Amino acid sequence: MFKTKVIEETIYRLSDLLDELQMVVRSTFDRSYWVIAEIVSVSEAKNGHLYLEIAEKENDFLQAKIRANIWSKTKSRILSEFEHVTNQSLKKGMKVLVNVTIDFHTVFGLSLNILDIDPNFSLGEIERQKQATLLKLEQEGLIDFNKQHVLPLAFQSIAIVSSETAAGYQDFLKQLSDNTYDYKFKTMLFQSTMQGKTAAESIIQALDKIENGDSPFDVVVLIRGGGSTLDLNCFDEYSLAVRLAQSQFPIFTGIGHERDTSIADKVAHTQFKTPTAVADYIVAHNRDFEIMLGTLSESINQYTFDLIDDQKQNISNLSKNLIYISQQKLHKNAKLLEQQNFNYQKAANNRLVRAGFRLDKISHILKHDLKIRFQQMDQNLENRFIKIIYNSKNLLQIHKHKTDQYKKSLSRQSLQRVQSSSLQIEQMNQLIHLADPKQILKKGFSITRVNGQLLRSIRNVSKEEILSTELYDGILESKIIKTNNHE
Image 1 (cartoon, rainbow, N blue to C red):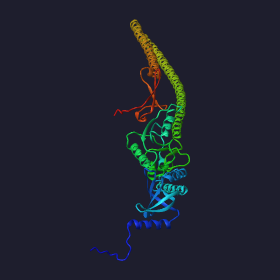
Image 2: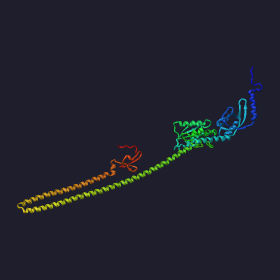
Image 3: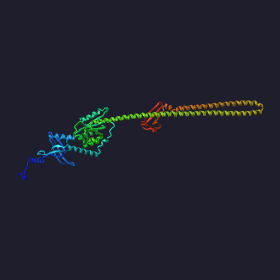
Image 4: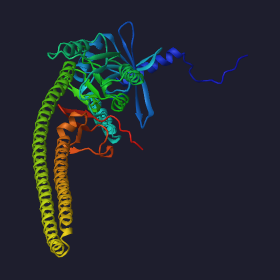
């Protein structure tokens, strides 16, 4: 026979016990209560009811947990008011202040029926979490990290993170392509979910594809627009903010919500309210670059013209100086030749005078000798007189002949000396003519200058310097590409 330990106590069926428990709960907790809790999970049934799990945590340790329900008949009112105020939908991890009644079901157990949700509490909690995230990012030095990227002088290649069906994406492309300056851009869409629970992770994956690809981009544009303002909280998530801040490209945001600034906007290089505002900025940036190029081109042209004018003036001055120096040199040489010619003529005249003196002296001596001889002859026998006269005449003729020859020789030597001097003068004139820079240039020679100075060695120049080469009929300018030493 089966024996039981219970002898005198009442034995209940489970359903009876739970019925009594239900009565106790309903009678004891017969009003509503405001409760602060964190949403652990949210799911919607086919019948329209919303089933939640809410909990209380302290330092990430679970203190309490219970099921909660929002029945379909009140769900529309509760969620509509909550989403209107907070621009958020109920989601996992959100802290809420809910007005609940306690219920116990014999099959489903203890649960809470949510009658209302205070959106202002959640709004404050969302802002608190947002400020905490911003503080953490600031402590990690990530708020201004992406702003350190230096923007290119002009945008050409643009990576777009958005949804292909988003109206903001289409608006961005239209504004970009219809610019009044006819600028052309290369754009590439990296498809991403832009709202909801998976949006942050989807955007991170798109950024990974951009940076792991082979295409170099000037900027990454994160745009959204045209949809609901709900579920924008993905742009406040810490993981997405870190990834945007650390991107190897500058990030532009045009998320398209006027009322609030997201954390993604804070860490981006530059934030804009709308996708079209992003496009307008890119076009204006390129326009500024074009204007800068025009101004720079005008400055270069003016500098070039001024430099050419200065060089022309320098060349003109050098030419005048060269002509003046050449004329001075020619004048000096002509003076020198004239003086030399005068000296030669004077020397020849002096020689002739000295030769005349010698002839006179010789004649005087001869006359004296003849006189003595005649006196001697007078003393000699007369028979020798005729012979002496005869011999004297012969001797006079011989001396006269020699004197004539000597005069002729002196005249010939003087003439030769004059001719030789004239020839030397002619040769010097030819040398002066040949030394004329124009004649030298005409023979194929040239004068090379660097920065207005004569170039005498390749050691005095360097690569990329401009050479000015003067030829017979003009001046060439050239750039040094290479030098070779003759060593």
